[in-house]
Every structure is written in structure tokens, then in C-alpha cells.
Length: 26
Image (tube, rainbow, N blue to C red; front, side, top):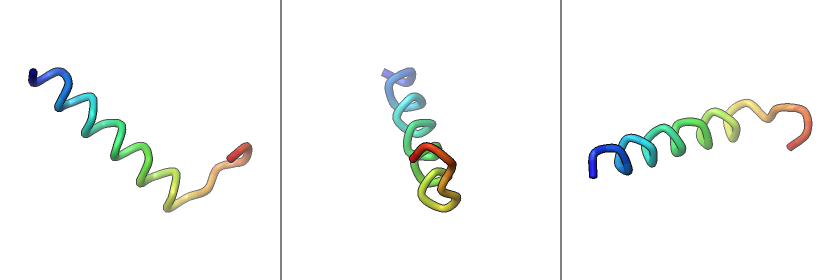
């Protein structure tokens, strides 16, 4: 399903962003 793929892509993007820029609380 495109929704699942899009959700996975967004999740991966968020994960990469968090890894690149560690936010307080991680």
C-alpha cells in the first residue's frame, strides 16, 4: 500500500534527521 510505503519513508527520514541532529531527550 502506498500509505505504508509513504509512512515508512517519513519514518526513515525522521530517524535520519534525529541521527544527524541529536535532539535533547534522546
